[in-house]
Every structure is written in C-alpha cells, then in structure tokens.
Amino acid sequence: MLGHTCQVWPVQRFSKAGRTAPRICGMAGVFSYESSEVDWCEDNYRHSETVAEFYNTVSSFIFFLFSPLMLYLLHPYAKERSRAVHLVWFMMIFVGIFSIYFHMTLSYVGQMLDEISILWVLAVGYALWFPRKHFPSFIKNRVEFSVLVFLTTVFSTLSSFAKPTVNAYALNCIALHILYCLGLELRSCTNPRIHRLARVSVFWWALAIACWLSDRFLCNFWKRINFCYLHSIWHVLIVVATAHGSTLIAYFDALHEIPHALPEIQYWPKDHWSLGVPFIAIRGSSKTQKEC
Image (cartoon, rainbow, N blue to C red; front, side):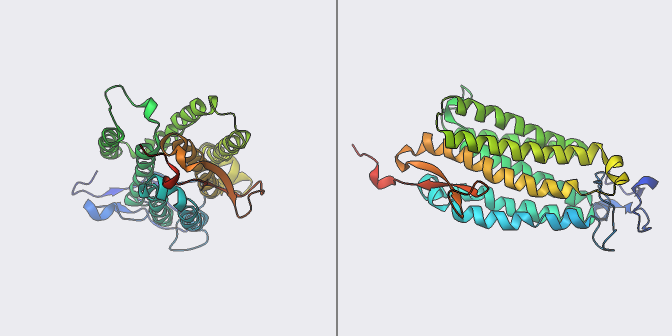
C-alpha cells in the first residue's frame, strides 16, 4: 500500500466540488485528502473547500463538551477508586480530535487515528472496570488482567492495518460483549434507579447504532430526501450513550471494589431531571472503612 508507485483512487471517490482523486505516494500519501477507503454519506466539500465532511466534523466537537464535564463529575469516585478512571474521558478528548481530523480530511491516517483511539479507550475501560469474577481462570489479579488487555490491544492495533474497512464494525461488535456483561450484573441488582439507567443507556446506544448503520447502508435513500447527516447525529448520540453506559459500569465497579464508599447514581445538573447527565455520588469514604 505504501510502496514507491502512486495509486489513484477510483472515479467514484471524486468529490462533488470537482477535486481530482488524490495520489498515494509513499508515506506522504496516507495524509492526503480522501486517501481513506471510508467515506460517509454526507456530501464532500459541500459547505467548505477545505473540510471534506462539514457536519461530521462539527458534530465531533461534542467530545470536548462531555469529556471535561465527565472528568469533573466522576472526580469524587476517581479519588476513592483510582485516578486512572480519568484516563477514559481524558482519552475521549483525543477521540474527538482525531474524529475532527478524519472527517475534515478523509485521510487514511485520520481514519486509523480515529479508530485506534476508540480501541484504546475501550481497552482502558476493560482494564479498569471488567469485573474480577469474570476474569479468565489463569488470571490472578487486575494487574495481570490489565497486562492481558494491553497485549491484546497492541495486537488488535497492529491487525487493524490489515483491513481498515472492517475496523469500525469490529469496534461496534465490542458493545455486544459490554451489554452481555451488564446484563449479568443487572440480574442481581434490585435498585430501580439502576435499571432505569440501564434502559436509558441501551436506548441511546441503540439509537446511535441505528444512525450509524443507516448512514452506511441506506445512503442512497437519505440522499434522495437530502438528509445525509446521520453520522453526525451518531457522534452526539454515542457520546451521550457512553456517558450513561460508562457511569453504569463504573457504578457496578464501585459496588465491588469500594463498597465502603456507598456509591449511588445521581444526575447533573438536577438529580430529578430525567434527561440529566448521570454520575456516581460518593456518600462514604475510605475513612469509614473498618480497619483490623
């Protein structure tokens, strides 16, 4: 792919702005506009001569709104559990940066950075929050499990370059395993507030994935009615779903790992708001933990 010969992309990859297809020449070519094989339904360069997918680019700024907010809301939980919790939403900022870069350029490098950053966010989440009781039998503690996750993620990162067009599908499939694990946790939970959060989390995720799939497979229909913005809506919905789902996962983690903290789910800015942003409130602390 990165040899000395130049590759010209097929005619169907040309933009409506009349740009010529980019040539892939060595390492420089992977940074070229439209050098990625992935192109979403939104018309390229329709609103800007320098931004390939305008609405997909602008909608990626949602990451910069939610990430600082979640870092702030989850800080009491992170102090009790581990400051590493902040890595999840700190890395989500980079997901936003790389998403902007990808949709602005549709470059091969932009695509890979966007997808690999999501992969590593998932890896950090697994290393931090995957329940100990579900560890493989040969894993003795969370440190060993984190090493396993790290090695698996490194392998997956390298493998992602083999067939980049399937990366997004593989990443979305990981959500099915997360849903399965949450289902196991909910079986032993009788708190109606937690079950409501689970239903809302699944709702936002299902709506988001429906937009993603529809943009990918029903593009011709959306073009006929001049509404090619479902991928930008996906950006907003998946960030909202992640805020709800990660809080739910962190709550179960807190119950198992720091039960003395007496965690509970609350909502910002008002706890009684149905559409508020969920976070973990800490009613106890390490000082209340019994000592031998």
